Image 1 (cartoon, rainbow, N blue to C red):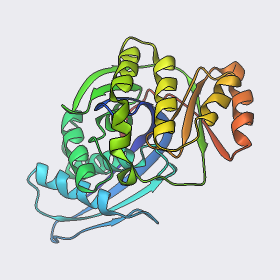
Image 2: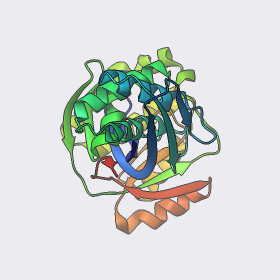
Image 3: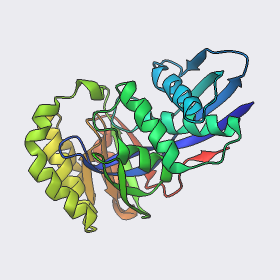
Image 4: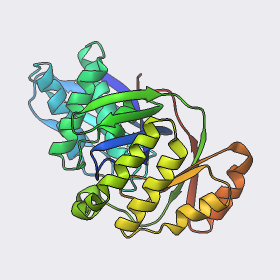
Length: 279
């Protein structure tokens, strides 16, 4: 019994660490998971390439336990999402793995159940601080998602057609190393930015988020200002970094891309309104 699925990467509009309220959008970057069940075994073994397989192994185990299935499994993931850059590689890996597991079990997809499983797996694997409801929903459902991470609640999902750019620095930033207390000095301001996003002022909210978090986390806010100067509608640090993303209209796409390419690798993407898929 074998199952396959893909899930999207995502990027930040409002980072939930400071105020437990988040907004994220899905990108076209993806992770594919293949799960092969081993009914006569107990061991769950994962292969995530050069990445620690703990998260995907825990996701398979939690999925099997959730549906009262006592058996082993082998899970393998492949991805084009850069890790430790704030581009939600963990959410994509967990979502793809959980969906591939239910496919192998021949169980009907229930998005709420998948989110419960993957958020708990992410917490156990210590790849999230807030539970990452914003990232998990964007990765699973596509589009823009607005969440209350404290209550693990999806407030709203929206669809928007928009080009985006991602700048990938060489430096990696792992979430569990984040100075959480420092970011929480910004709680009041970030909650105001969150309200802007809820009221459809996505561009302003995203840029405010980026300036505040990049300053608090000792990243470079100048990267954001460069994108705005070149014509981006909005730009932000994604997650806790190290990547930055910008929402850009087609007419300014190449200008912003050239500005960021001076620093390193730039990926063209868009807000991906299609959610994760069982193959």
